[in-house]
Image (cartoon, rainbow, N blue to C red):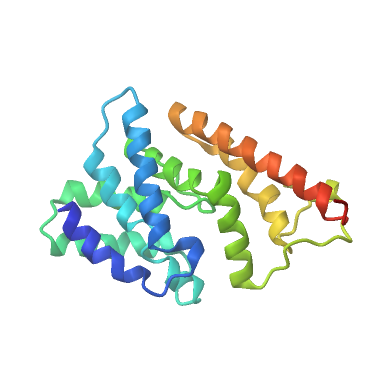
Length: 212
């Protein structure tokens, strides 16, 4: 079923911008496999990977303003895809929960280990070198400036950052991600990737004034 779902999921990403394209899905898949390998407890790998393939099938529609919540819409659409492929009811429900719970900004908490692993893998792709690239790619998509030199660096934090710049997004969301990890393996990887982001931001802060 995994390859059949992969074939069904990929067309949803044909018009996706770079921050949430099919390459993002493939990276999350690889991260999920790493987390599964490092996790001590038994994991239903099939559920995790099915959910990863389907987790962002509604993202492009949300970005176009056609739906409000790609996770809710994606869970319903995932159910239809899995039913078409003769998925059993339990599998469909478990995958749908993973898809519904993966979104950073909604109130759905992951209740299963599989859902927690999907969340961690998705959030890990927003950290580190790739995560930095995705922040700037998404910021360009929505027309936000890279940085506002009129604002002091100290203003760019989780409380005061208004998301007006791409730089703000690191403090409003990205650097909070390690604290939102659900697994030990996810936390370990997130700590290392967040350190890279902080190092980059320090270097960035040193350069925005024009100093060499």
